Length: 87
Ligand SMILES: [Zn+2]
Ligand SMILES: [Zn+2]
Ligand SMILES: [Zn+2]
Image: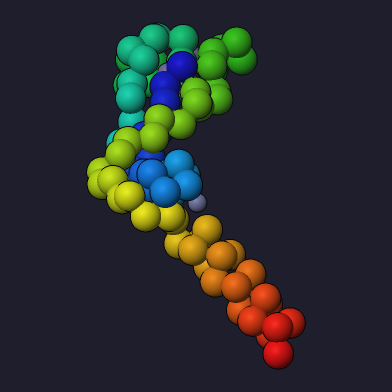
């Protein structure tokens, strides 16, 4: 089963992986019974051949010690809410 590779940033502050590019490349399983593989014959219509992608591989292109943009935005929104309540 071939796997798609996603490239992104790993944020250690919240241990989230944020994908920037998907798919950047394909990890070919080299199985002739997998329709995604380049080994698979183009004239094969066997319904038993694998059609699905395997689990996505997270390829870390950069690492940050901060929190990811989603978590940062969520914390900011929460803090703003708290400030508004304090008034
Ligand atoms: Zn494959
Ligand atoms: Zn096939
Ligand atoms: Zn996060």
